[in-house]
Image (cartoon, rainbow, N blue to C red; front, side, top):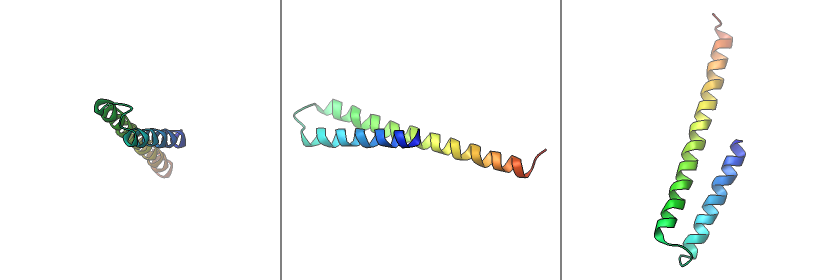
Length: 67
C-alpha cells in the first residue's frame, strides 16, 4: 500500500510538472488545486507511516514487558 501511495504521488507530481510546462492548458486555480492535492497526499502517507511504525514499536514493547 505504501509503494502504491508513493507511485500516486509521483504521478501527481509528473502531472503537475507537465501542466506547469504547458500553462495554457489550465488556469492558476487548477494548478493550485493540483499542488494542494499532492501536498495532502504526502501528508497522509507520512501520517500512515508514523502510525504503522508506532504500532510496531508498541507491539515490540509489550512483547518484551508483558503484564
